[in-house]
Image (cartoon, chains in turn green, red):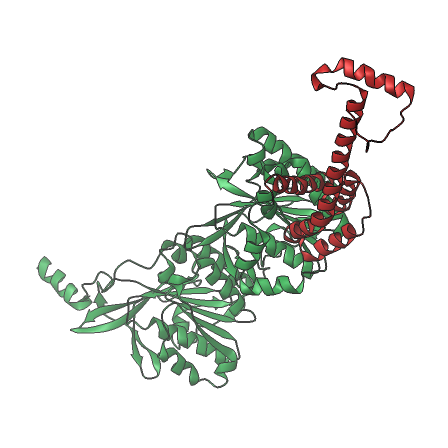
Length: 468
Length: 134
């Protein structure tokens, strides 16, 4: 049997929650959310109809309640009949360190367990135990005895400890605990990491964590999905280009990479519109500020408001794993996804996890996806984008400018496609009032990719002249 | 020396003999004879009774409210009120028994060890206050 952690999305990472009657450690530095984790766990249990007990060894209950986020405080108020607490923090000034003696604690806690028929216990902040037990070995022994006692009463416990030099305070809590969860906060990002779950597996690595008004929410670094993509044929919806690209399939990821002004957003818009025209739901996610051109562009489509959604995400100020989770939520029942300017995230150290998880997810779910990546090159170069998205994309189309006959023309190249017979020549395109217009292959020119195009004919003449 | 207001009290012979033995055994107390010993003993006993009376009075007067205040912060007002009502229902005449009963009631809520710590602390608080003339 499993007991929910009460933290949104965390149960999925540990096979459904804590093992019933287990002793579980949550540790981390100051301000990482250990107390809120514990209270969130208990409130959720109380909401499920269980009697719960919160034991504070450090902060007073009065202080804790005063500092609770509003929504969590409201949730607590609704279940206060089942929410019990023992505030040793308030007793310490009166009774001194005697109350921190293991058997005093155990007896007080187990008495309350019996009286209130408690099922879940939160034991918050074991650091003060060292005030009574100066020898750390005795602290460890006291924690072990406490864990055994609580287990014998059949309760499922979360206990918290401070992080000291990367380990829990006494270095032994990990061994006593059936599961170990570490919380971190670097001033900007909150992270949760699972180190151990006795008797079950877990999803490793660091996951996003947010303290919301109504409680904690985890944003997993991976998106769970069962493969349901059956690889049906699909199209981008851009005339001529589809033929040149060859076959593409549902769930494909197409990377449109190019410099500013090359019309990447219009490729995305056209891709989305084409889906809408077929009755497919689509989402356009932009990592830059609101773009009126996109809004106007979608208005042209009948029923676009029902089928298409435009979302702006402040990528620089939003946790990357929260973005990942939002993409999952946004694409529920969607067939198409456009992510505009993913390069804004590319400097994030967790970007690799993000892009791998996202692409695996859209592949599995059959969500045809177009990702745009803005490069900083002025003319054509060999820069396509960051290695992760380039390696994982199914189709790659590069947009660039080329000076042809004294004019700056827009040119695209299909770098990668499923189809071995895709167009290998360079294709000129224009951005008109009606969107993208494929002009055709750039004929009789060489050296465009290198930035110094010359007419093939001229070269031929020069070669002939040379040999003469 | 006695005066006309003094009254006679009879004691059994073996007790009288025991008094004599004690006077001899503990000369440092300076009892000049059995009469002085008995007067001293009665004085001490009356003082003890008064002390116990005060202790009981203080315990009855202070413990319910103090326990209520401590428990209210420790585990919430509902249980504190419940414990308070139970303590108010104690009718013991001896202070030790009264405190024992308080501990028994508290034990149901917080366990015996913590109950004893709380009760002891409350009694100590009152004694300290008494010493300081509160």
